Image (cartoon, rainbow, N blue to C red):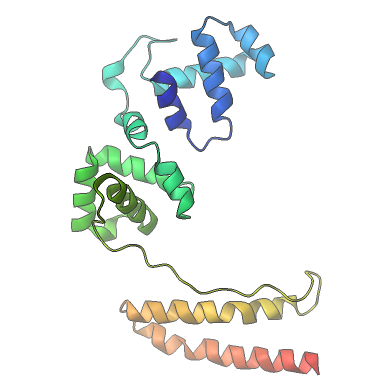
Amino acid sequence: MILEKLRACWAFSPTVHRNVALFEGFLKGKSFADLAQEHGLSKSRVRQIIDKADRLVGGGILTKAESSKASPRSDFMVDYPYVWNLAEMHRLGSVTPHHFFAELERAGSLERLVDKMKRLPWRTPTTTRELARLVWQKERGESPWPALKRSSMAIVEPSCPADHPDRGLQCQLALEPAFHELAERAAESGWTPARDSLRAPRARRRTLEEQLRQWRD
């Protein structure tokens, strides 16, 4: 149970397997010197890792046990270990799970968190809210609100090498449709000045196309 909690707490850390192996070795009676030699680390670094692991599980290994003061966040990470994979699968970013668990700790339960997000949707970052929706859907089989709308805009790949003098021009042409769609979506959401700003991208695009045509000729 302790090792599983550590894996959940370290989650995205690239050294999670090494750190858990260090802690497991320490629990089996290996000394700091033995662990340092086995993993190619200094003794002080090994002690730092063991000390951090001890704090994550609430103490009792290197320090006096204070399980009642252990952060509920660690328990939530064990309860919902798939959150990291969900965030990665849906391209929500590696930081989003940390925000999600912080919000979950403040709320005290998934039910209270979802209720809060329903009442005050603007107070939570979009990606964190989407991750909460996905977790609720996995746990309850239904979505508490509509899924995050993602853009289907595809950006064309460059057709000239990186050192080509017109690379920047082609990049602007490739990004122009995405900017146009972004302004359209902003206008649909009520940002009416965005509609007027669409004229500028169109004018810039005409200028860029003329420049590109001249270069081809």
